[in-house]
Image (cartoon, rainbow, N blue to C red; front, side):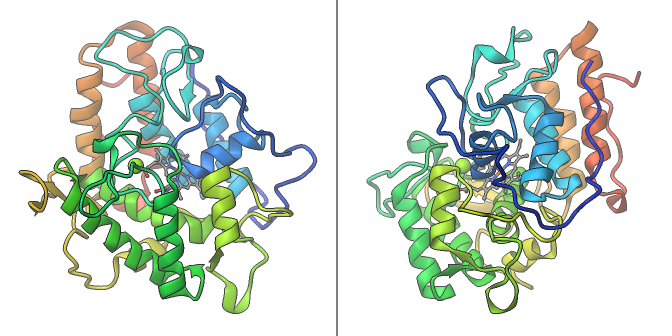
Length: 349
Ligand code: HEM
Ligand code: MG
């Protein structure tokens, strides 16, 4: 039976996280690493098991302990990832690709592919992941290949934008401009560009995370909210804390106002709404059928009522009861203020 998620931490302040118990050790063959620089860092420092296979409770505890990710965001991201990409019977999720270490798979179409699995939590228009496509914009998405490895071309663009809009730092202005640019690159290079609700929510969230969680928690004054390129490279490329790094001063995550600041007040920039390329490159249409930043409940309803149901059409026994437990943990992670309607695809226990 999966253990219920941990509660919030008691001490929610800044703290040295590269302590003697959490040294950096590079992964060895067989260890799972994936598209998320946060989780890769946590695994490389032993906040989650170094093989990159962990229970949701371990991932939630580690995200709070190592980055001061807020409890609600840590839970929501983890349970979405686990229900779509993990093994709900063994209670194990890979932070990278598919591996035997998550145990025997439930029957297909369940895939238990780890968080590398494209179109689940991982999606198009990432900041530093994707493949050099050799097409007009030179930079593209999963359509062209590997969606999870660090890509130097993308990181060079991250650095260029930080120089141009942030005096050499990644800040909210850079995040807004780079997010816009990445979306345009995907629109004009990726015929299958998918920026529906689930991806719109994670893409803008992930654009804010480096500002909220990769900046040393002791930073105050003019450099608050400013990520240096050396720290950025350390996290994105190496999955490694900079020397003597302190985690953020306050819990932060997907529900911070910074996320909407990156969208921009009244931003009508094309591609900032949820949508997709409907018919090849340069055919972006707005499509909010799977919700989005302005309709998180709809995102939840489609996720559980359609996508989870497609992976697990007829679960029985432990599979069904563990799915129900995880779906409850997921629902309980949504901010209460949203007042979302709970969905029970397998009845309630
Ligand atoms: C991507 C940070 C926790 C799953 C990202 C990205 C950042 C980030 C900055 C963007 C990478 C890029 O676009 O190049 C963090 C931080 C976390 C955290 C600081 C705090 C612990 C989590 C958790 C999950 C998760 C708990 C789910 C289990 C992912 C996935 C992506 C991602 C699947 C790839 C999305 C994509 O760009 O296509 N994360 N993350 N992350 N994160 Fe995390
Ligand atoms: Mg991606």
